[in-house]
View 1 (cartoon, rainbow, N blue to C red):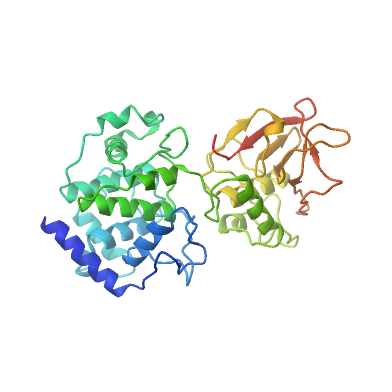
View 2 (cartoon, rainbow, N blue to C red):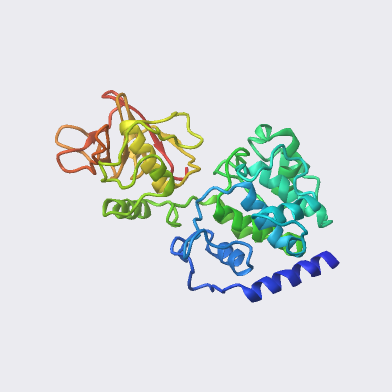
Length: 374
């Protein structure tokens, strides 16, 4: 009980000092009220646990590293130890001191500052916080049979994953309920995890709607994945919207900037895909797909060309592109699409009445991949 009261007092102190955001406005230009994790991000921000990455910017899709996750957990649950740490030096030494004091690295293989936090590592550290806080937990046995890819969870993380899953603190990463243990954690997901963990430690029920909302797929602008929203985001890019940091890293300072475009170095790879590193047309198609659907893309194959939707990835025998229209018949072909295309020169083709792609598995079409919910 003393730990819970201490946590509440610390959070009240932090809230009193932090700037406030309410349900109708956002201090971050990249977290609109429509963003799927808006309320959790605002809660983490108002609690003083998560701040922006730059003035007015939260970077909800940015991948989290260990130093950042340790800072969030220790700010939230051990802030008094952070403030009273005898260590000096650069950030985050005091946060690490508090984390080690409370054994938050138990079960982890590596916890250096720049180590990316995977979903299974996140579960282990949440489990360690709950253990330190003497929280009553289930054994997670029931959850182990409900997670389809549980066998791919590292052996030393399995109990933690099962317990967090059974308590409703974690949910599947796709429509099939797979946990995706090696997937990375982004800042928006971290805000959701923080609010769930805070409720659990304070004896409050976890919001089941938060789990449901996380299982709904969202675009990079926070809108749900629908044809209407995909088309609207495509139009933003067509009209000059700048690419995200990952695309810039791959060489796209702008989708129209030929001077800085290199189609080969570095190649662009879609996370969790079997495609490998794409160059030329594939590089642009992969990068643009990530601009629409985010970094941790989950996709399935479409077997009927008539079912292609805007935002679907199209593979031909010698070309890659992303559909930016629904299928339509032409004078010569029963099923065609407009697409965004690129090549070795970096020139971007947004499709036009005289440039469309016929879709036929008998005429060069290899596969169609969709990021829409099945």
